[in-house]
Length: 404
Image (cartoon, rainbow, N blue to C red; front, side, top):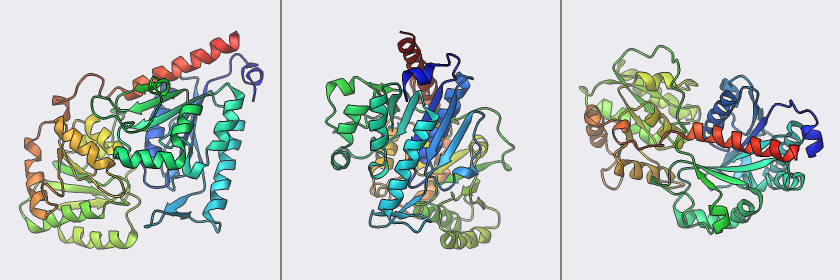
């Protein structure tokens, strides 16, 4: 790929490529999808392509001029190792195949900007050969996008050292975007980034969820119960159901979204319990337009993932967050800091005890909680607008260089 080839047509529309490894959950894909939608809306001539390993990518609708390429999926075992999701290949073979598909996509799509989500070298280093290829081409801007919290500093530093992620960040990336505010939390604490690299960090603010037209919500009032993707939501769902089972007067009713990754056998068990509650709790498996449920809810009980947190802020709902604490402290760090700022209430295992009584009290207190907007400061939810402006600036730099 050369500048001549890329700019031989002066009317060539801008192209943005997202890498979203998505080995587990929905977070990376949903974040990339939101960013792609915002960028293409801000620049109607641009197009975006998302490379994702999410097994449920095909269940989402994508905006006009946004599409995706599905990479072969992998699953994470309980011991932390990975295996191919459906193909009869070793994890090394699948990683090599994914790496080849990524590089081919880059060569064919010829992006003006590549935005990499969270992992500087990609899943098991699969992105390195593409980064080296782009480094030699000199005409694609490389951006590393980080959520507001990654993990506790010591654990993150060890992980990045093992993956040689600091060296890759220093070497390849023109900019680093943190989808949060430094006043809330700095995900790079503990990382030995050089002053020059730290100066390339942009604090975008959180990514506001689309507050445009939504569908007809269920009968109100209700509280929304969501464990995000659901793969690690067993404990929280069990706690909410136990609260409604123990207290027959607990209200309002609950609408539970299991998420696509809550296992079938476990879901059957929960479905039996839901049915026995005679409409006080209703449940669905997967809702691609969960924004409608957020919009109509009088409150939210959720886990502490980044996307769910953005939805709580965007729809300005009083919320109780039940964060997971394994395999990372990411959700606990986010929830505890948000509670300090008065944005949400956290149900903490050590402090409150994860018991039905604690959940009953939390649900009953939801109407008395302040909504997040009462504590929101300037710039908290301006991430999409900030990113769209940065892409515009990067594209402007490319055109100036090409013209020169």
